[in-house]
Image 1 (tube, helix red, strand yellow):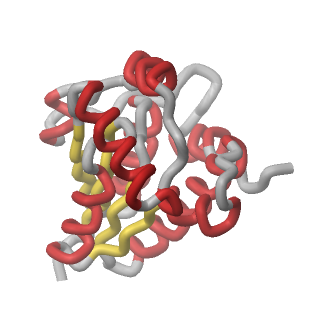
Image 2 (tube, one colour; image 1 turned 180 degrees about the vertical axis):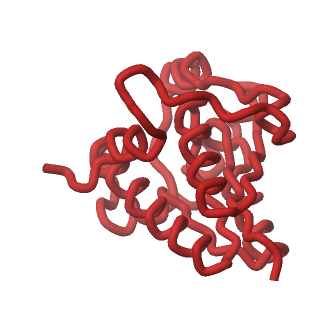
Length: 178
């Protein structure tokens, strides 16, 4: 059996991450972990940020255990920050697994069209998104470098104040909402 792979989907809402994650799930026999499905199931129309962070962290714990067991995993979040991606790349490396980033981007007008279509056709799978939010999120994402995407770029050192990526990961994705 070869080394398992952690597939990371990176991108803004409505750029094709979940569609690709579903394809990877089938083609690579991967466990797909999609945060939005859990948020919707637990909170309905609400999208509480802290709960989202906790759910992401719990899903990451499941992902890492699956990698330990030799199972491919696809994490279907936005992973907008380089630190998030570095922490997960390091976690995969620590377990002897591969990590593969898949970046998705679309023009804002196409995102808007997809968001509107999703809201009209499947409102139970999404939340309303304003033009202002889409623009704000586009300004916030740290676009992966070519080296991040092709796996040739070394993983960064953890940010100041964190001795390891595991420590940073536990800080970024808290274990509970309290």
